View 1 (cartoon, rainbow, N blue to C red):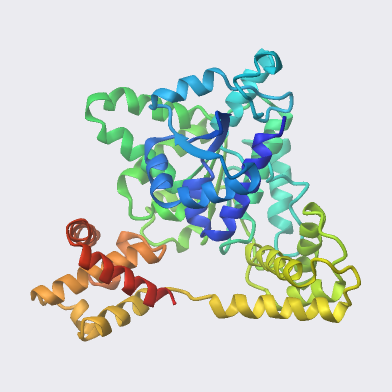
View 2: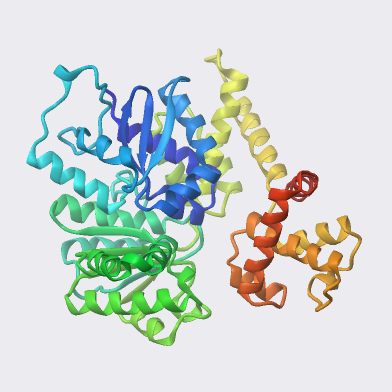
Length: 477
């Protein structure tokens, strides 16, 4: 039997390279592999909203990667606990001794391992912690840019909930904050298997909270379940905490959850792209509490660390015979973050396999030329979509002035163009409704209304849908 968790780790690693950190952490990381039945690969989503977004936006990519690893006849189904099939799958799931899910073929009853108390307990840990087993201290590359944060993290593992509480990790995207945070959780679970360790992105926390309070029929019971889930954790890790800024209800819930856990001497770990006092629209009481433990930043890796990261990537991916000159070339030219660095190595290897698949006498200079080609093509394709770019393209397409999109002019053509620009800003950037509203000098509710108007027109008008798709292509190219 193959290891299904290993396959899902490989699939999600590919997805990670295609997505922003925020989108990956919010929509993909909470997913967990369950079982393959009749060539259908069942994946668990913790809440209905995650399932809905994954099906709408990421199913094609997930299924494409699944076919690569599992065969062209595989189908993927994302389910949540409310689905009728969920209990059928859960009740028959099998776990190996290391707690990872295995492929089970229902027709092979004799090969089906017997459940044990240990396997069920470990299954619950995997189901409820949402940790990526690949994020460990063993594969976290230490360097000057992260050595203080790493030292604090290792100390927390020995004494969770004591002097380094809360632990607030901050730094740019793709520098290893999530890896380090989850390494703490994985190590604590290794030391104490029964510990209640919970990882979640702030956006998922917020969505789950909103789902709880908007279910009017069951709001009281759901609220209690929600609070018990988070306030009874031994270790609570919330990723990208900056996204709760401006969300009053979510901040209120975080505040009370934080106090409850700190009073109980439970460990809290948070990540953000900024220090607490630099996060706009974050309540002062949360700023003081987030700053009340220890803050550690992770900076961009220096050259030596970048080389070490590449060598580690080569080792774990079992890539053979990469000359030092190529490693140093990549380390010199890709300086942004770890994600870009590892992605560049994969890009170089893809080009290498295309050009020299059947040769084993490659010179260092030939290898280096391939690396130059791979990275230059990557740079040509790289394009950052901003609201200003969207505004320029919209005003050019509809023959308006850029100021018209910010003005109070309510003429039909201007208002619709403004709505289109807001819709595209939400679709093509990672910015929140509040940030988009600020750029258009409107509040977030106006942005929501604009997006809804565009979606309605897309559903009703095929010509408009074609027109907007062409505009999106022009913006992205």
